[in-house]
View 1 (cartoon, rainbow, N blue to C red):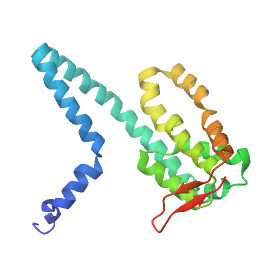
View 2: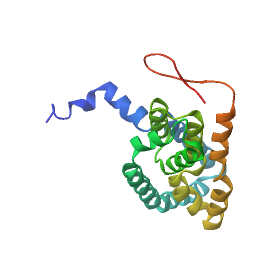
View 3: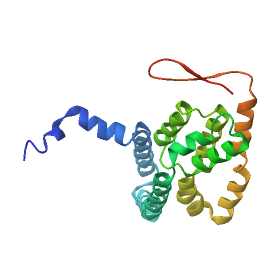
View 4: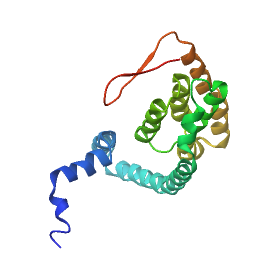
Amino acid sequence: MALRFGFLSNRSWRRAVLIDGFGASFWGFLGIAVLTGGACYLIRGPEAFSHALGRDGGLVLELLPRVCVALSIAALIWFLMPRDKISALVGTESGIKGLIIATIAGTVTPGGPSSAYALLAVLGVSGADRGAMVAYISAWAMLGLQRVLVWDLPFMGTEFALFRILITLPLPIIAGLIARRLPFEMKLKEEDGPGRVKA
């Protein structure tokens, strides 16, 4: 039994779980939450602190099912999406169709920067032009499906979510068109050496 759970005493494993698993930003926000909670307790008293804590707990319980559903939907779309074929469809000769495909791919990419930039790197080394890459990462940042389901709809309502999507929908394509027009070569970071992606 001791050998089976021996990894628990491994310092690097604990660091990987606490730091890499949750991310540095999680611990930063947790520290800020603890500090502001302490300030609320000292300044406004225990009654106000208990009231705020109860409201926060209710908000977490309300959001948790939606987060699980949104992540599940996004993960299923991500799994079903033919990523190898997408890389072939967003090359330098793909035109506006390549930007639209890259925008759709960015919209349905789940998770945080680790998953988005992982696919962005795949697109880069697979021959995608810089316009498609810019359109993809812009769509992920502005039109992310899971953010719409988790944040826009619960907090702001359907009307606001649709309004925001309609306004920002063309922006990744416009950004991709601008990126294609810029008169310079784009360098990509590679493990074995520098690479370039031409317009």
